[in-house]
Amino acid sequence: MAYGQKILKGDAYKRAAIKRRHIRIRKHINGTAERPRLVVTRSNRHIVAQVIDDIKGHTLASASTLDTTIRGGEGDKSAQAKQVGALVAERAKAAGVEAVVFDRGGNQYAGRIAALADAAREAGLKF
Image (cartoon, rainbow, N blue to C red; front, side, top):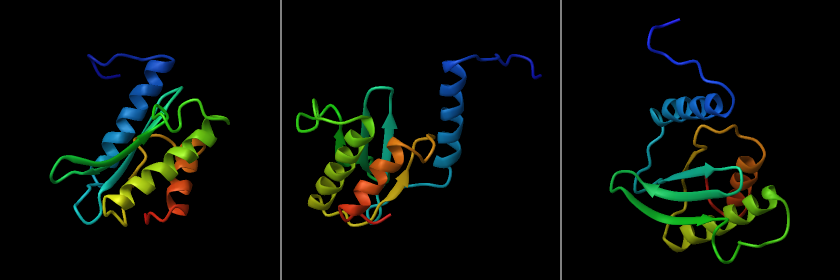
């Protein structure tokens, strides 16, 4: 074991692992004006999706379960993630974005993350 390195347990270990994966993913994924980055942030209760142009450092479109159109909606968290995916795709297309690079934020591509991505694809956003 290396000196100065803490051994984490429980949720702290999971968050550190997600952070490591996100850093590793971001080495290869960058958003441009032609293909901005669709980044997904997930918590235990909510999910947030943003379309970001990394060159300018601007958010072009965003949607989350905290939006008034989705908040208090029916269904489980996967159903709400589908609504967020469709809404962010609709807003991105209104902003003139046709294709994006998907950044899962270090999370596993399963469950709510996959539901959001599938809904965004069905709404016409190209990955």
